[in-house]
Length: 468
Image (cartoon, rainbow, N blue to C red):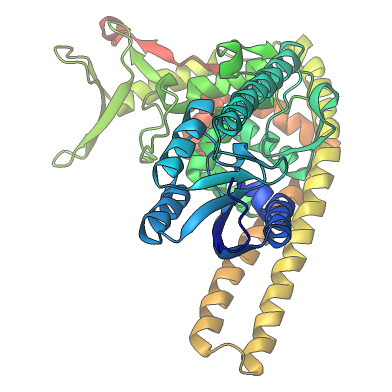
């Protein structure tokens, strides 16, 4: 390198970090700039400009490096580039060497300030190119070690990625542990509500009363994530399902039942319009081809029908007949007298076993109710002080009041469930012995819950036995 002090030596300084995390923390960039500026001062370089200074891929030249090369081609008085280490151009050897050759072609000398190596001599260029190759080897080696470490963790059931919704994560690598948080408890409810036949829309609304807001897409991702069933599935393991060491929110059997319910096993979110007069739609299937029934109404005659939609199949039955047959089928399920006492004990244990969870629900709901009431109160004060105008106040009041009303209704529902007493148990057992009557007199939601409970896989309709 020419060290003639009478010649003004103009330079650009290049700094780069490869990740947003490094950029946000700033340490790497500041350190690189400090070392380059110190070198420039000690060797009497005139710093003309700075380039880089942000996160940019270490593998491909981005707009920042192109911007510097463009500036060099315009300003021929700049003959030097100062960089803390050569791998700040790229940790890909081929890419880094191409960048160096491009800079040399513009009659620019690159100086690595931490070592004093530069590209003005064949020996210096060889050493810098060698360091580029070593940087790529080091980078590849670290990536392989990281991948190998993560793969080993998953092989023994420890997931080290981003913590899924509903879990708190502690520790690193093989020592990573998960605990179920309050959102996780609500996610468990979402799975159970789905098993009871509740629609995604109603689940989202019900979660909102607990101040847990999710979109329909997010809910679907939750309901289809096997992590909540204690399983790990990852591309590093060729998507093989592995038993995880983290606590499961629901059992694997329950998870599989939810998958059967969701979108005809397609794994895609689909919205189905609710039709209260057709509770058996998609639950009853054609015996000839297994196609789920759809439904329609002949408006002129005011008659409802179910039918098989497969081309060429003419299976068609009136809703009145199918509903009657289904109710008669449910009536078959009754309890012999000796088993009624056993059933009462089961109901009693179930009621008492759910009490703790219901009390937890009540605590969450009351907390949410207080938060909503405080929001309404604060908005009133802000409106009175002129901080918000009347339109904003009325909109916020309407939204919060709707949330409050839903929360109060949910609190009443939980209180009713908590108030179940021994005198109710007899009525519950008797009601369970009259499933057909219960099904005919219930809402769409209750009908679907009952259907999924008794016949989780649906039932077949054979038109040849329609009149039997």
